[in-house]
Image 1 (cartoon, protein in one colour):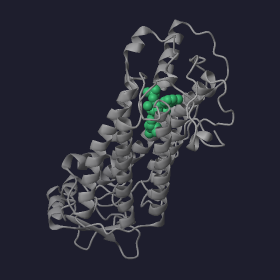
Image 2 (tube, protein in one colour):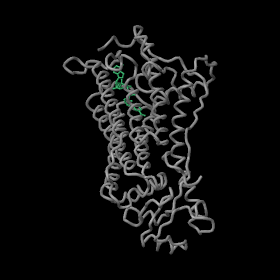
Image 3 (cartoon, helix red, strand yellow):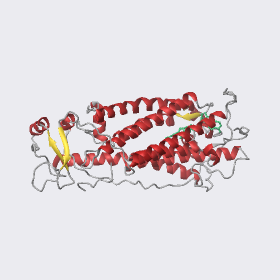
Length: 433
Ligand SMILES: NC(=O)c1ccc[n+]([C@@H]2O[C@H](COP(=O)([O-])OP(=O)(O)OC[C@H]3O[C@@H](n4cnc5c(N)ncnc54)[C@H](OP(=O)(O)O)[C@@H]3O)[C@@H](O)[C@H]2O)c1
């Protein structure tokens, strides 16, 4: 979903002394989902989709018009005729047929319904990310609200316990003494974070290879990916450029490299304690990396290249995006190494599994610089996509509120357990929050 294109229609310190949290707080957030859906003309049908990527049809620019021009290959035309719809002429169909020009007219008949459906699916994808962002914002506001909570009844206690159980993990979960026993059964080791990155490396690596082959070798995406892509992806637009195709490929590569680095850190850098996460958080994390890679794939048209090979066009935003990505990734790695070293001796041997106060690098400014770096990594991908991709900004919003919530809990943990904790440190964003 691109907004630039006009629519055709409409060192270590002592370990902790006490832990815990002050109980649930109330508040009702509101998150304005910044989505501007666009209806775009789509002339393709399932048959055409099968033809795509095999040279079955071609897109181009109609002279004097911003509407996409598609020259239909013989196989596609025959299929349209067989279905009883008007054959698309070899001269091309602009998608802006005048009134009375038959079933190809924008917004009319089955084609119109399909076009609306495609727009609705695009809107749904952005809406899902916005909804996730809104949920984490709501949880953050509930947490930040300082009003004293009324004395809860038994049901209220269970709901409050469940809420705390679902927003906390690892060190910030410890001290949740009022959790019912059955809730504690639904926890898995936090070191299982590793599985998220295994899934991400495999899934996003597969998507990356598939997209690479489609873009550079003119091959089709696997049919089941085409189906998913067709349901959630966007259609070809007159303004599709090689740089946009390259942007999506580059972002998928950055996402995959990020997952590889995080997997390596989980395996060889980080030292995990006996901390836990809720099974819901675990399942969510597994699904997250599948969803985020699929979202990138949906930023290229469903027919990808129509058999045409990509000519690489590097733009200024690709360079800036990659530079921000490298800078944020380096700092994230350094901060995770600082956390790991808190538990190691000078020789690198693990000597403790307790939590201490970290110092150095961005820890001098914030309690959770690795979360801030995570946000910057997703912002760098938004830059790489050209900065106008609304769906990706919804993903960035999700990461912002998700990491802000975790950072607030972590900051609270440090302040409660370390009386000499540096007062100037913010939780998440240097000097701001
Ligand atoms: N994109 C997303 O939606 C998303 C969501 C979550 C996380 N992440 C990213 O994943 C990375 C890890 O996140 P995380 O929440 O696991 O970070 P974390 O809670 O800070 O844990 C990172 C590692 O450091 C250890 N650690 C934490 N605080 C410590 C302390 N005070 N003293 C000693 N060791 C300490 C942890 O051990 P234990 O916790 O086992 O004790 C763990 O091994 C981050 O870069 C984050 O941005 C991304």
